[in-house]
Length: 283
Image 1 (cartoon, rainbow, N blue to C red):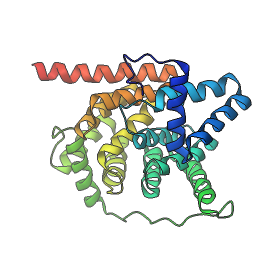
Image 2 (image 1 turned 90 degrees about the vertical axis):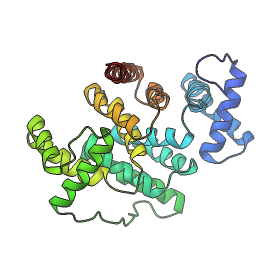
Image 3 (image 1 turned 45 degrees about the horizontal axis):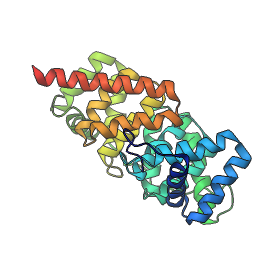
Image 4 (image 1 turned 180 degrees about the vertical axis):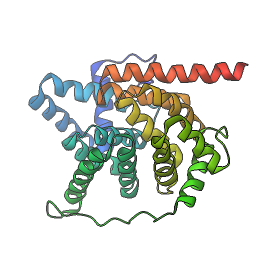
């Protein structure tokens, strides 16, 4: 397995790692994984070679993030970018890597907030398609899902302030009214919706940890090229328990799931956020 920095491997070793990744990803034995890799090359040519040796053998084999975390990142990005067929494949992979259906559904909420409701509404249909294939249900079968709590604004505000305290490591105002007033002063009515809906309702839900929510949001922001917002959510990810190595690895994952330009911009924004944290700590 590559450490991503110092190891040097030949093609056969990368192919062996690719077989192991495919085995865990789709639940097959080594010989079947080899047949799948060979089939990818026959159907896709050079693209199939690189999908096996680079995507599986280089990227997915890296130890800096768990396979579950990589699936969380990839599903989030595919939802945000409306990559429908790939999303259906990776929903199944995510379940094999230990994500639950509740957790996958929870990613849809962050896509709604950070990439827009049209992307989330499109994605939910393809998530259902993936579940139907797994369950043997007829195509087009819709799952019933549990509705969110029906919250009043006072509760939304209280929960938002709690989220923002953890996101900012206590720098946000403890009083909900003061904290929202600060956001409104900066963002106007956008600040109201960000505070009450994004933080007060989505981020405060218990179905996914705040660490995983940060991982999802950082991935979406990187995939969409939102460097300014990464300056907010990279420190928030650290405050929610992600390591610097894990956050940088999100940008490595972007190389093949959002493209090198997004990966480069995301890494530069991430390291700029780290430098700002370090400069503040040195004062």
